[in-house]
Image 1 (cartoon, rainbow, N blue to C red):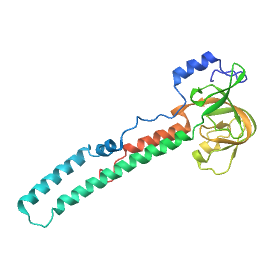
Image 2 (cartoon, rainbow, N blue to C red; image 1 turned 30 degrees about the vertical axis):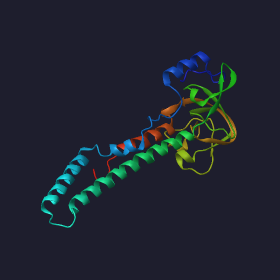
Image 3 (cartoon, rainbow, N blue to C red; image 1 turned 135 degrees about the vertical axis):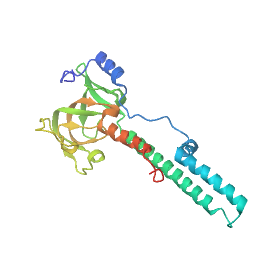
Length: 229
């Protein structure tokens, strides 16, 4: 189904064409934004703007009346707005840090078979349909369906939370299976702890299981803060 010879792999021309079509095998990252701009962006919400206007009005009325020693109402609203901004800023920073950590878990190089020849290429150039070789100690560069396995085991704690190595084989699954039960699949960012194997790449970049996690982490910055709720 991937249009690849399970023994010779893709041709160089086909690999280049697929790279052009699917893009680099890497997790997408937004252009870095200075911390001060991210913090100021927390005050762009309409609710926050209304509260700032209410703060200004409250402070102005206090200056006129001076009924209390301090403008307690204005100070309380200002404190709420500031706390909301801090929470929003921290929420975004945590999401960005988590995505950066995932990017560090990706492989730098990958072992592939192209035109029947064993090659080592940058992991970012792996494409769907590539025939990758996996050996003990290798970080797997992309999601793939195993076509050969010799006592292969992988550590998938980063994806499934399973602390023990998972044995892999090429047998078809009987039906629908959860991520941790797909014994004939290997995943980007996991590590081969024992044995060796070969797999045909089924997903790269943000289409991998690791990419989906990165996408969900990036989406957390759109969540409403407690004040907005």
